[in-house]
Length: 198
Image (tube, rainbow, N blue to C red; front, side, top):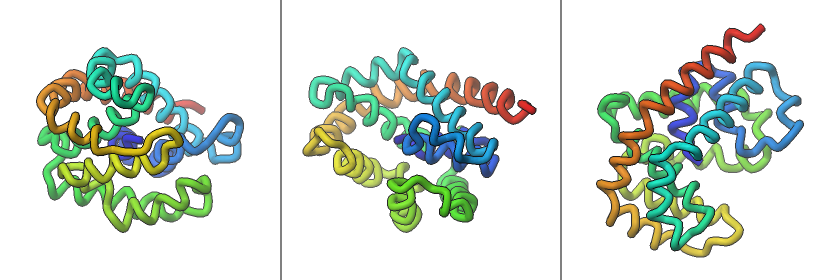
């Protein structure tokens, strides 16, 4: 669910961006219905997810949410990572974050007819409410937690998650600091390998 990170780690390649954004909604062999470039974006997304799940910083951060949310703690960490990426002055200024968010929507929109159903329904709201940009605010993060709960089958509230986020803000920032340089390097190596495939 960390749309900002997946978009950013597409390294401004349009088809890889689209694959990276839609991957969670493309199951099994359905990916073969897409162009080779979008398939590479789906592969990159899955590599990022696997790396994120296995990283020690993610495991530590999940402990904050796990007593209340169990397996969904990973999804909350995805949103947490997007918040801290949006606030990371080494990666974005507030202006460049806004400009990047607009680039993502403009670049992805021509592919809208290929979006999987659920993503196709969600994308207009992502654009209208500028989710990618608003991750840098506390209220935008709170809304993202709420959206995560609305799309989940077995969760009924997000207030606890936001309270935990606020209470453990510094610890979660530390998890992001330990994590992001590692995932960025891994993603760039994977991206380079994918785009250089015949």
